[in-house]
Length: 230
Image 1: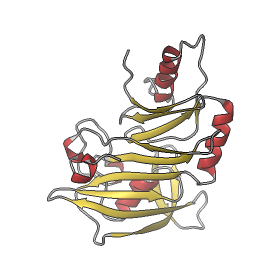
Image 2: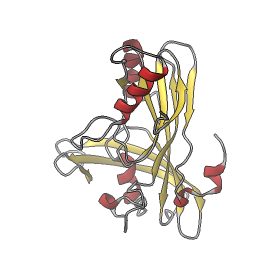
Image 3: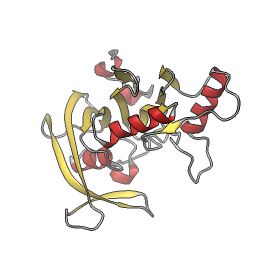
Image 4: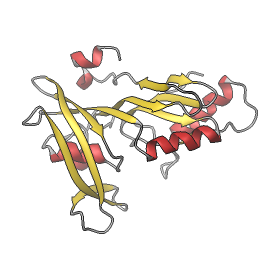
């Protein structure tokens, strides 16, 4: 059976896939099939693994967000990949689509964020506030159309909803992001945020994994930049 994701890379230690929007990365209260469960089932079938195949979760994307997700296929891989994210040596590039562009072409959003765990919403806070986490996001305008804007985001930190809040802070909430100021939902209930590129050191070989996920097929993602490979 064809999996509901594209396999970007697979070897003995790593599995990288392109996550569609709408699938939770890990099991949650919804009870819906998670990307972790689906990827584990693919590994078991693809490699004829008896019993439960090992697959380690080393980072996450929000459920309504699409893009590159990496899993570890061994405990050694899980430890070293997790360390790359923890030490911020992994390079992450995202695309976002907003109804309008920021007033300048590029910049940095430097703020402190607090998450309301009950409501699953993040807000901007003072540095002195309990639970506040520092968030730094570099951004630039990639392409402007009459009705929408393609913005590139490069997070230096990895906070919950960091890029979604950064876009709202710029006055450009991402399309479909009702939590942070979008005017309406998208047809597939996604948020127009896509983890397009991840560069990370391979856990056991002296090489860099350069992983790129194609942009979603929705019309809002139709830009010259998104049609170019790589």
